[in-house]
Structures are given as C-alpha cells and as structure tokens.
Image (spheres, protein in one colour):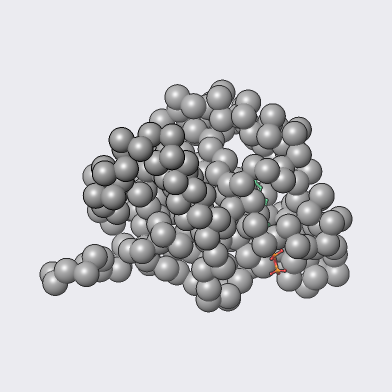
Length: 238
Ligand code: FPP
C-alpha cells in the first residue's frame, strides 16, 4: 500500500451559507450545492484508492440553527441518501452514519438503517456521515457505556481498569473505523469545532479557503497531494 495515499480522509464541510449569500440566494441553496461536492469527493476518493471518506454533515451544535434550516438540512439528507444509494451500492461503497440518533426523525433513522444494511458488505470505500455528532458527545457516551458495562458485569472491572488507549477506542461511536490520517476544513476557518477530538490525535490538518460547494475533484486531489508532502512522525524521531 502506498503510504502517501491516506487511508482515511475526513472533511469538515464549511462555507455553504457564505457561498449562497455571495450569489444572493438562501443558505439552503448552498447546502444543496454542497451535496454535489460530497458526490465529487466520493468519486475522487474511489479513483485515488482512499479507503475511508468521512464528512461532518451536522454537529450537535447545529441543532441550534433556525428550525427552518435544520428541517431543510434533514430533508436534504433523506433525499440525498435515497437518491444516491443505488449508485453508491453499485460502486462498492459501504455507507455508515455515526452520531446521536436521539433527535433524528424516525423517517431519517429508517432511511439510514436501510442504506447501512444494504451496503454493509461493500469494500471499495467506506463513506461515513457524521450526523448529530460531536467529539465530546462521543467521548462521554463511551464513558457511559463503560460505566453501564461495569455495573452489569462487575467481573469485567479489572480488565477495564487495565485497559489501554486501544481498549477505549472500542467504546467510541467510531469503533472499527481507523483514525483520520487527513482532516480538511474548507472556508478559511481554522478550528476543529468539536469534531473527532479523540480520533484526531495524530491527524494531519489542512485548512483551505475554498468554500465547500466549490470543493470538487480537483480540490480533493490537491489535498491528497499536500498530504503526500507531509512527514508523519507520531512523536518519534525519523
Ligand atoms: C456548513 O456550512 C455546512 C453544514 C452545516 C451542512 C453540510 C451538509 C451537507 C452539505 C449535506 C450533506 C449530505 C449528505 C447526505 C452527506 P455553513 O452553513 O456553516 O456555512 P457558513 O459558515 O458559510 O454559514
């Protein structure tokens, strides 16, 4: 395997609202155009041999946006999943959604479950959509899972107390998914915004000025080229 190709690329899709505003349109127009960028990145990831592509589609904090925008975004997710699933499945994409499902509408949960079940055995690319997700939520739900397990199986307590970092990984909502090698954030903002806090410990970060709806195949390939130039040391001396 070529080490210069990241196994897992994660995208913080930012700038849809500004993109729409620049064109005198409603913010939702930017989100609709943003779905096209997701499609382009999926295609480019497959062509480049990336095995995991993840997108930060909706954070826990995004629930605080105006209700009309939240409703439009949720409607867009259902529509995009229903519209894209045949093509994703045909192209060997395994589709996974990760996040706090408590506030998701039943229709959306049903769509997610059916898309995940249908594509579960695909192996070309895993597309992870982080929806109603936040890094702090993930770490907290992992801790709660451990507490619940210790209460129901006290005999596990000793193993849990001796657990290493890898053991904790298994309780995270991202269990089984490799940590992101490269995290790209668009639109000139330089922060993580409560994204993969635990999982990004050794990720390479790339912040680009491009607004998300303009981030297409060329921009994705450029991000991979930038990654190939980075020297990853993981705290060691090379
Ligand atoms: C951030 O831009 C973007 C979002 C919060 C939503 C992104 C979601 C999609 C593109 C839909 C993806 C759908 C699937 C099925 C994966 P912003 O609104 O914060 O932009 P601004 O900073 O310019 O206001």
